Image 1 (tube, rainbow, N blue to C red):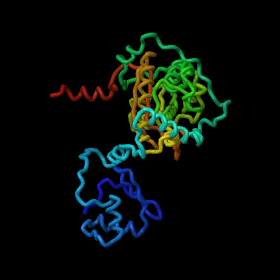
Image 2: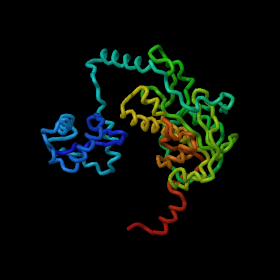
Image 3: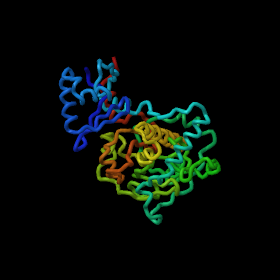
Length: 359
């Protein structure tokens, strides 16, 4: 007898939760069952077919009759649990044709809409506190191909300021609800979900939000601002911390003089509202990636260099954005500014040069 290798045990007073993350099954164990499981983990050979708890463990898959082959993952166990635990969405019913799917999906959407769409905390800010942004500009015709060719990650910025007009264009084309697409909406779109961005979003939920980190933008005081896509406006959240930007980004100090950047957050409550399965967590990162790429392409088209990272000092960033203990969490950072186009900062290049030519 063997213990199922795909178990995750979560203490939850007064008992514990045992999650078979491969099969998406959860079991709540009281003290008696928890104690017996601990004994069997210590010695699976102690299995007793006359013990009802042991047989229940076997029937539910907590115990296996033979050794289970496991993935040679290569990374840490947490990433393995996340990846396998979000695979293969359990479906009670699989539609057999397009008509069945349409009915099934419509029924699901109608069920979801029986509850209210979650509202973010910063959406409650007083309208008088909003800072209206100038109208976004149109990018030059045929600029997409050039932007794709020219976009690259830079790690050397001049610190020169960025115009408020460019910031307006960046935010509108990356995160804004596009007025130009309002004619796309028809009767199939549920009320409250009609907003359209330039990047795709799982379920049309627009679950990602943006917080602007401003160090040098003309017409805007330094600080942290929440972006309101419906109003195309900003609201002040917090002043800049005394510590440099690099400390918020795990010591990447070459970015300290970046004039403007965007923290991309995800509204997990919005995703869970429609998709009540852990796989939806993957979609948060996919959407953040779409928005990051759009931001970079727009910045490149505006003649700005770009840089991005997923290395955040999460607790500090959450506190700075007012997201501590929230269902909205920061996932990614992307910034831009005038750059000499260097991939490496001068300090790193100096170290590489001192090493001499590679053998």
